[in-house]
Image (cartoon, rainbow, N blue to C red; front, side, top):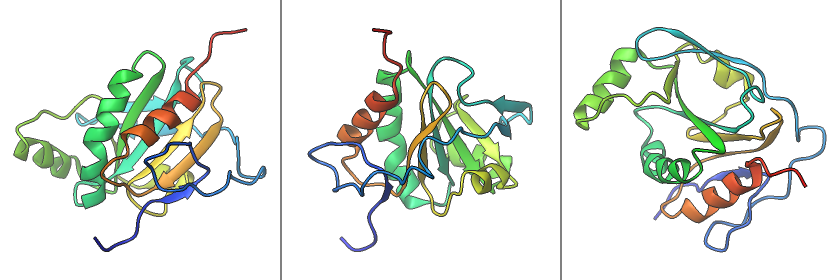
Amino acid sequence: SGGRGPRWSGGCSSGSSPAPLPALPPSKQRVKGAPLYLEDIQGKTVKLVPGQTGKALVLDFWATWCGPCRVLAPQLEKVAGEYKDKVEVYSLSVREKDTTVLGFFKKQGRTVPSHVLMDASGENSDNYKVEGLPTLVMIRSDGRIVRSFAGAGKNMVPFLRACFEEISPKPAD
């Protein structure tokens, strides 16, 4: 199988995932995530502010034309379901029209999930320095970015679980 694998920035440990790169340098690590201004599929404005809900946040930047995004999506949905009480996941369609996204889900016989939001201008992906799709940005419940990575593979569930576990809020000691 040719092609490039995921580009890792920071890393969550998991035996069945590619070897992650070293942690982000301190200057780029644990920066507060910027607020996002998006639209849902009906055109209603949605503002996401990392650190405001008490839950961790995963931003999934994707597009309908992106093959690796389609590989990642069901794996991310599975892990997101397991961590729904601790982690919010939003899938941000980058630089696409709402009609394109609607058509994509309609072809699959699905309605557009409520966690799918539109970044039609690409402003939010630019603010989060997204260079390739899919890109996941992992943000702790205090609003600080812990990791980000671009790309996808076939067996990412263990890796995603490790990342979700790392950012999940922990009970106070």
